[in-house]
Length: 376
Image (cartoon, rainbow, N blue to C red; front, side, top):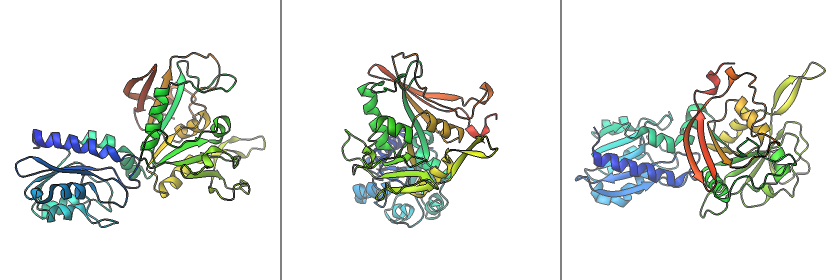
């Protein structure tokens, strides 16, 4: 059983892992703390960039010879494969570590098996310490491995009566400066920020992270079925990379120097000729494309139509709502048609956090049960 000292060290490792959110895709975020043979903390580190040294290597370097006979606390089971870096399990063995405690077992079949390798070398291994805390920080990468698609956080700002804009379309600013600063924090932790063409035309958002130094700018993604994005759109500047997702037969001649991906259309109800009408782009195909590009976490900032498409596809893992103490009485709601026609089909959520940001409330919630298992 883990000691109190080891538990404190693992809690520190979990905090360290969070420092690299948004910087390590397609790799996980990982933290590591080394205790010497007497239980004194002698080294720590975290995985800082994809392709760079893993958390264990940073921590072992800091500990030096004092790691021999000591304990390594790691938020993810040490890897067992050689990629752009060597296997961490072997590095721990060579450093003379006597005991390894990890929080979360590695679900990636190409990298798992580190615990078995360590045990075979005579290292004492224990798993599961502070597993829930470590999973919460690394949830984007874990979701991508388990589901084969990026983790999606849908963010929106609304009035207390659920409006995201006034009847005349004005929406700046419903939320406070504190809430807007918090959105930049969420962007900094994401690999991609996604909006729809309606949001692009209405607000001309920039979508890059501002006010935070040293961040890896997320990929800006515009879901633009009919390729109506113009070359003067702010998302096409050089502040961050941008991808425009369009329909298979969209005309993109006016976007010659833009990264464009063509995706299949989603299907709606039958039109007047009895055929299936086109209803935007296929969300599953979009997420598969982003996953193939190394995106592991998505911040969905699109309007109600795009949000409805993601909810209908069962592709919203967390909802973050910024609720302002404002009433409008008219104007668009946060969520449009999501394929839910009766209360029995409602996507019910569990609230995981409520925080005060200036005058606003930030509410964070997750699906109470997987969307795919709900009544249809």
